[in-house]
Structures are given as structure tokens and as C-alpha cells.
Image (spheres, rainbow, N blue to C red):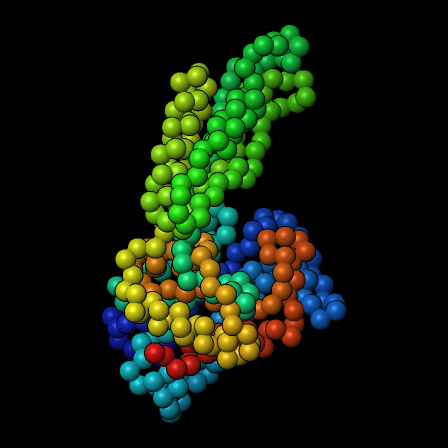
Length: 325
């Protein structure tokens, strides 16, 4: 929803977002415990705590937007506010939520802020990535009677070795990972099919292009050696595009100032893969700000320190209603 209600339907907006999805399957139980000053639950921090901060801000706005003096809270010439609870940030979601928002509001977005991660971290540079499902098929057979037939698992393993032998490009940070692997039927069956999920990441666009070329060369070599291998693109996260440096720096400085004033500690700035990737690739100044203290993100041991949540609320409110440069 866009606030205030009288903002022009084609007017500029500042977007504030937090994602609703977690890395765990929907059918997986996510047990909750509150003990020793902590909320312990998978997904409690990433991104539930941040999502709550966004919702509290939305509640405040809904209660005050029609009251006298509302415009003075944000500033009379401030852009409208667009608050978004989105999905598709985690796993293979491929940032589908923020992609849709940027498609609908892109030319109206003056800035973008997503609440994600901890209070000690500000992400102001985008790490791009490419994700693939790689499938190998063979004739297979009985492990004893057909011994010597090609094994899909062994073929896939040989491709993994090739991919892990790629020499990384210089400059920035580039990584690769075989995240999951599956295949075969039983211990006494020569596997007919095996597949894996594979990705590479980099904070530099040219390095992503380099890795894409090396990846394709490894797949082509495997095919030339007789391997029946197919590749499906599962996700593409872009790096940063041409962003106005002064406007981006002003947004980053605002985030740093708000977090430092509220927590009393200077946050660290880093590169990361977040919902910011899409607006940054479109030239929209963007920043990712955390709203809690805790640890164990993406694990079943995740927890949030209860005492940090008030600071998180204040950071979210400070980003929306505090002084803008």
C-alpha cells in the first residue's frame, strides 16, 4: 500500500520491504522455544523479526496517516511510502517478489530499503549469481550383471570435479558451490539418472560472465566425452547496474547513521545477495538493513535476542521517518 493516501498515483515512492519466506520446506515443522532471553526458531530472525518491524511501521502509519501534521512527520516534500511484504527471496525463489514490485513501480522508485539480517550489518553492494539444475542420464542396469555400464552418479561426479577445477577470476569475490546432489535407485542398481543444484556468485558483473563461460566449457567438455547431460537455469540474480553514486551514498549514510545512533555501535558494510539486487541492477539506490541481534540463520538453531527487538523497531522507524539527506 502507498502512503499517504493522497500521494499522486504516478508520484515518486520510497520502498521498504521484508520477505516472508524461509529456507525450510512448508511441510517442515518449525518448533518455537523462548528461553534465556532468546526466541529460538528456524526463520525467527531471517526474516520474521524484520518482517514484524515492517508491519509495526505499517500499523503506525495506518493509525496516523489521516491525522493533522502527518506530512510533517516525513517532511512535506517527501515521496510516498510503499511498504511490501514479499516472497521469493530465499532458495530458488529467484527474487520473484521484488522483481514484480520493480516491474510495477520501477520508474517511480526514488530509493529502496529491505529489512533483512542483523543490526550489525548493512549490505550496500549486490552479489549476483547464476543457479542451475544439472541432470545426467545413462543406460544403467544391474550392479553385477551389467557391471561396466555407465553410472549417472559417477558421470555427475566427474562433472563436479571439472566445475571445482575452474580457476577463479581475479578481483572482487567469486564463489561456486554444488549445493545438493541426488540420484540412483538402490545399492544394487547402476544409476540411470542423477542431478544436482549448482551455483556461482560474484560481486562483479564481469566475473559472473567469466564464470558463465567457464561453466559452459565444462559442460561442453563433458558432452564431448560422451556424457548425456542437460542444464536448466533455476535462477539469475544480477549485480549492480549504473546507480547515481551521490544518491546511493546518501541512502547508505542514512542507514549507517540510524543504526549507529540507535544501537551505539558502528555497523559493518558488506556485499550480499538480497532483494536489493533487482533495484540496484535497475539503477535505483538501495540498501539492506538488519533489525535484530541473533545467530544461526538458515539453520534449525537460529535464534533472536529478545532485548534487541526494540532497537530493530526503532531502526525500521528511523529509516522511514527519520531525517533524510
